[in-house]
Image (tube, rainbow, N blue to C red; front, side, top):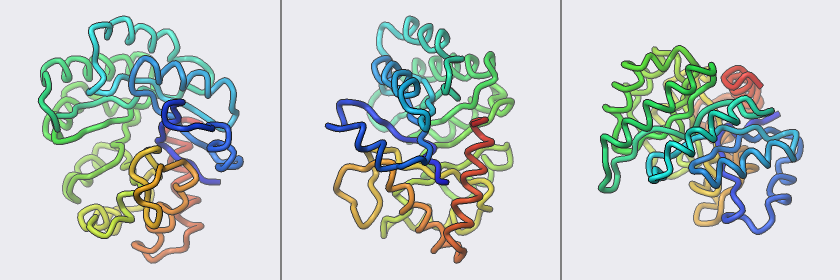
Length: 249
């Protein structure tokens, strides 16, 4: 068994989603919402496929004037079958943005997750200090927290792990220039790691430059086994157990 703990399976990204899902055989995918449209698609996927679970959330770059209505929709569906968390949510300062608005919506979604005792999947880009501070202030670690697509230092990884967070590792770890991420993987215990693809993005080597899909999560596991010099089956067994516990599958 292998679990892709974070992927996007939107119709706009794939001509044949049925085939993409079939390629994963009976392995598990956790499909992530990012806006109102994709949240609705996640719900439909969870209804249709027994091996798909989902998280619902508003990505910091997808905040619109209808945000309150969209948050209400998430709350209305948070206890649907196979919906296992709130995500992906967080902060993204990479482009010019309204930081205070992002913080406000981030906090609202953390509180929603805590209200319903659901795990949180965090997106943070060029905003790690504010992300860390908000998680602390809001006592977010009362529920399970995943730092999706981790890209920070080993020191930062250890700080999150100390709080009980899991570290999401995806295709970037296979890139030649990903020295910092490889250092993280080498020096943290496997029990803190979740496998992910972030499909259709961040395709691992040797397929970098093509559209990613959940089956490529195996290549992430393979790279982790090489970095840690352990058998790939150990990586699969432990990360599957991690994801099963993290999302109460």
